[in-house]
Image 1: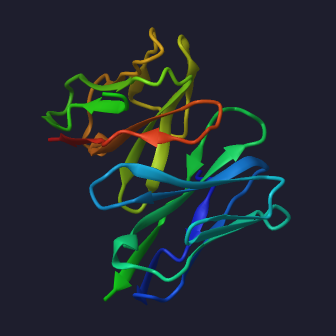
Image 2: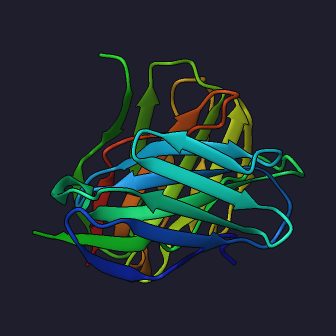
Length: 112
Length: 111
Protein backbone atom coordinates (compact mmCIF):
# COMPACT_ATOMS: atom_id res chain seq x y z
CA UNK A 1 0.00 0.00 0.00
CA UNK A 2 1.14 3.53 -0.64
CA UNK A 3 2.69 5.47 2.17
CA UNK A 4 1.68 8.99 1.24
CA UNK A 5 -1.75 10.21 0.27
CA UNK A 6 -2.19 13.67 -1.20
CA UNK A 7 -5.26 15.79 -0.77
CA UNK A 8 -7.00 17.10 -2.78
CA UNK A 9 -6.70 14.87 -5.84
CA UNK A 10 -7.25 17.88 -8.08
CA UNK A 11 -7.20 21.63 -7.53
CA UNK A 12 -8.03 24.54 -9.83
CA UNK A 13 -7.24 28.11 -8.78
CA UNK A 14 -6.87 31.52 -10.39
CA UNK A 15 -3.45 32.77 -11.29
CA UNK A 16 -2.02 34.78 -8.44
CA UNK A 17 -3.81 32.84 -5.74
CA UNK A 18 -2.09 30.52 -3.30
CA UNK A 19 -2.32 26.74 -3.70
CA UNK A 20 -2.17 24.35 -0.77
CA UNK A 21 -1.74 20.60 -1.05
CA UNK A 22 -1.64 18.13 1.80
CA UNK A 23 0.04 14.79 2.30
CA UNK A 24 -0.66 12.20 4.97
CA UNK A 25 1.54 9.20 5.61
CA UNK A 26 1.50 6.11 7.78
CA UNK A 27 4.89 5.22 9.24
CA UNK A 28 7.78 7.06 10.85
CA UNK A 29 9.95 8.90 8.40
CA UNK A 30 13.49 10.15 8.01
CA UNK A 31 12.38 12.85 5.62
CA UNK A 32 9.52 13.82 3.34
CA UNK A 33 9.95 15.20 -0.16
CA UNK A 34 7.78 16.98 -2.68
CA UNK A 35 8.09 16.54 -6.43
CA UNK A 36 6.49 18.16 -9.45
CA UNK A 37 5.59 16.44 -12.70
CA UNK A 38 4.68 18.31 -15.83
CA UNK A 39 2.53 16.43 -18.32
CA UNK A 40 4.48 13.72 -20.13
CA UNK A 41 7.69 14.37 -18.21
CA UNK A 42 9.65 12.84 -15.38
CA UNK A 43 9.37 14.06 -11.81
CA UNK A 44 11.45 16.96 -10.56
CA UNK A 45 12.52 17.29 -6.94
CA UNK A 46 11.21 20.45 -5.26
CA UNK A 47 12.02 20.33 -1.59
CA UNK A 48 13.03 17.95 1.18
CA UNK A 49 12.07 18.39 4.83
CA UNK A 50 13.66 16.30 7.55
CA UNK A 51 11.72 14.75 10.41
CA UNK A 52 13.23 17.21 12.91
CA UNK A 53 12.18 20.24 10.84
CA UNK A 54 8.76 21.86 11.02
CA UNK A 55 8.87 24.30 8.15
CA UNK A 56 11.01 24.93 5.11
CA UNK A 57 10.97 27.55 2.36
CA UNK A 58 12.27 27.58 -1.17
CA UNK A 59 11.31 30.58 -3.29
CA UNK A 60 7.51 30.58 -3.55
CA UNK A 61 7.27 27.17 -1.91
CA UNK A 62 6.61 26.58 1.75
CA UNK A 63 6.49 23.11 3.22
CA UNK A 64 5.36 22.21 6.71
CA UNK A 65 5.70 18.90 8.51
CA UNK A 66 3.77 17.68 11.53
CA UNK A 67 5.20 14.32 12.57
CA UNK A 68 2.66 13.92 15.39
CA UNK A 69 -0.13 13.99 12.82
CA UNK A 70 1.95 12.31 10.13
CA UNK A 71 1.10 15.03 7.69
CA UNK A 72 2.76 17.63 5.49
CA UNK A 73 1.55 20.52 3.39
CA UNK A 74 2.95 22.26 0.34
CA UNK A 75 2.01 25.89 -0.21
CA UNK A 76 2.70 27.59 -3.53
CA UNK A 77 2.27 31.33 -3.20
CA UNK A 78 1.33 33.73 -6.01
CA UNK A 79 0.65 30.90 -8.44
CA UNK A 80 1.59 31.15 -12.10
CA UNK A 81 0.44 29.33 -15.21
CA UNK A 82 3.76 27.46 -15.23
CA UNK A 83 2.85 25.91 -11.86
CA UNK A 84 0.22 23.78 -13.60
CA UNK A 85 1.45 20.25 -12.94
CA UNK A 86 0.97 17.25 -10.71
CA UNK A 87 2.57 17.36 -7.27
CA UNK A 88 3.62 14.29 -5.32
CA UNK A 89 4.84 13.73 -1.81
CA UNK A 90 7.35 10.96 -1.15
CA UNK A 91 8.37 9.48 2.18
CA UNK A 92 11.79 8.17 3.12
CA UNK A 93 11.22 5.75 5.98
CA UNK A 94 13.01 5.87 9.30
CA UNK A 95 13.65 2.14 9.26
CA UNK A 96 16.07 2.67 6.39
CA UNK A 97 14.69 -0.10 4.26
CA UNK A 98 15.61 2.27 1.46
CA UNK A 99 12.19 2.37 -0.11
CA UNK A 100 11.03 5.82 -1.14
CA UNK A 101 7.30 5.64 -1.58
CA UNK A 102 5.11 8.12 -3.44
CA UNK A 103 1.52 9.14 -3.03
CA UNK A 104 -1.00 9.40 -5.85
CA UNK A 105 -0.47 13.09 -6.37
CA UNK A 106 -2.46 16.31 -6.64
CA UNK A 107 -3.23 17.70 -10.10
CA UNK A 108 -2.94 21.47 -9.93
CA UNK A 109 -4.43 23.64 -12.67
CA UNK A 110 -3.78 27.37 -12.69
CA UNK A 111 -6.50 29.30 -14.49
CA UNK A 112 -5.50 32.46 -16.40
CA UNK B 1 26.02 14.11 -21.06
CA UNK B 2 25.56 13.75 -17.34
CA UNK B 3 22.20 12.58 -16.20
CA UNK B 4 19.93 9.59 -16.15
CA UNK B 5 18.92 8.02 -19.44
CA UNK B 6 16.10 5.61 -20.07
CA UNK B 7 15.67 3.61 -23.23
CA UNK B 8 13.63 3.04 -25.21
CA UNK B 9 11.36 6.06 -24.89
CA UNK B 10 8.44 4.11 -26.35
CA UNK B 11 7.94 0.37 -26.67
CA UNK B 12 5.11 -1.75 -28.04
CA UNK B 13 5.23 -5.47 -27.43
CA UNK B 14 2.96 -8.48 -27.32
CA UNK B 15 1.82 -10.54 -24.37
CA UNK B 16 4.28 -13.27 -23.44
CA UNK B 17 7.34 -11.54 -24.82
CA UNK B 18 10.35 -10.61 -22.76
CA UNK B 19 11.09 -6.90 -22.60
CA UNK B 20 14.03 -5.09 -21.04
CA UNK B 21 13.94 -1.44 -20.13
CA UNK B 22 17.30 0.21 -19.73
CA UNK B 23 18.42 2.81 -17.22
CA UNK B 24 21.83 4.43 -17.12
CA UNK B 25 23.08 7.15 -14.78
CA UNK B 26 26.33 9.05 -14.91
CA UNK B 27 26.50 10.41 -11.36
CA UNK B 28 27.74 7.20 -9.68
CA UNK B 29 24.73 7.37 -7.38
CA UNK B 30 24.41 4.46 -4.98
CA UNK B 31 20.64 4.21 -5.05
CA UNK B 32 18.52 3.40 -8.07
CA UNK B 33 14.79 2.85 -8.32
CA UNK B 34 12.18 1.66 -10.77
CA UNK B 35 8.63 3.01 -10.57
CA UNK B 36 5.58 2.51 -12.68
CA UNK B 37 2.98 5.21 -13.11
CA UNK B 38 -0.64 4.42 -13.81
CA UNK B 39 -3.70 6.61 -13.77
CA UNK B 40 -5.31 6.46 -10.37
CA UNK B 41 -2.31 4.82 -8.71
CA UNK B 42 0.35 7.48 -8.85
CA UNK B 43 3.88 6.08 -8.76
CA UNK B 44 4.45 2.62 -7.38
CA UNK B 45 7.86 1.24 -6.54
CA UNK B 46 8.77 -1.94 -8.42
CA UNK B 47 12.37 -2.61 -7.37
CA UNK B 48 15.21 -0.64 -5.92
CA UNK B 49 18.92 -1.01 -5.38
CA UNK B 50 21.15 0.41 -2.67
CA UNK B 51 24.41 -0.44 -4.47
CA UNK B 52 25.82 -2.71 -7.15
CA UNK B 53 24.72 -6.31 -6.62
CA UNK B 54 22.16 -5.27 -3.99
CA UNK B 55 18.53 -5.20 -5.06
CA UNK B 56 15.24 -5.50 -3.22
CA UNK B 57 11.55 -5.67 -3.95
CA UNK B 58 9.28 -2.66 -3.82
CA UNK B 59 5.50 -2.49 -3.69
CA UNK B 60 4.69 -4.26 -6.98
CA UNK B 61 7.58 -6.57 -7.97
CA UNK B 62 5.65 -9.51 -9.42
CA UNK B 63 6.46 -10.17 -13.08
CA UNK B 64 9.63 -8.07 -13.03
CA UNK B 65 13.32 -8.87 -12.66
CA UNK B 66 16.21 -6.48 -12.08
CA UNK B 67 19.95 -6.69 -11.95
CA UNK B 68 22.71 -4.30 -11.01
CA UNK B 69 26.10 -5.63 -11.99
CA UNK B 70 27.45 -2.10 -12.46
CA UNK B 71 26.68 1.00 -10.41
CA UNK B 72 25.56 3.01 -13.42
CA UNK B 73 23.10 0.53 -14.93
CA UNK B 74 19.83 -0.82 -13.58
CA UNK B 75 17.86 -2.69 -16.24
CA UNK B 76 14.29 -3.81 -15.63
CA UNK B 77 13.09 -6.98 -17.36
CA UNK B 78 9.53 -8.10 -17.87
CA UNK B 79 10.02 -11.84 -18.25
CA UNK B 80 6.66 -12.53 -19.90
CA UNK B 81 4.80 -9.29 -20.55
CA UNK B 82 1.13 -9.03 -19.65
CA UNK B 83 -1.40 -6.34 -20.55
CA UNK B 84 -1.52 -5.22 -16.94
CA UNK B 85 2.10 -4.17 -17.32
CA UNK B 86 1.13 -1.49 -19.83
CA UNK B 87 2.35 1.62 -18.04
CA UNK B 88 4.86 4.42 -17.95
CA UNK B 89 8.07 3.30 -16.27
CA UNK B 90 10.41 5.72 -14.52
CA UNK B 91 13.92 5.09 -13.37
CA UNK B 92 15.46 7.28 -10.68
CA UNK B 93 18.72 7.53 -8.82
CA UNK B 94 19.94 9.25 -5.69
CA UNK B 95 23.01 9.69 -3.56
CA UNK B 96 22.93 9.73 0.24
CA UNK B 97 20.89 12.92 0.14
CA UNK B 98 18.00 10.67 -0.93
CA UNK B 99 16.71 13.28 -3.39
CA UNK B 100 15.60 11.39 -6.47
CA UNK B 101 16.63 12.38 -9.97
CA UNK B 102 14.30 10.92 -12.57
CA UNK B 103 14.68 9.82 -16.14
CA UNK B 104 12.22 10.84 -18.84
CA UNK B 105 10.34 7.56 -18.67
CA UNK B 106 9.53 4.66 -20.95
CA UNK B 107 5.99 4.33 -22.22
CA UNK B 108 5.29 0.60 -22.60
CA UNK B 109 2.25 -0.85 -24.34
CA UNK B 110 1.59 -4.57 -24.13
CA UNK B 111 -0.90 -5.74 -26.76
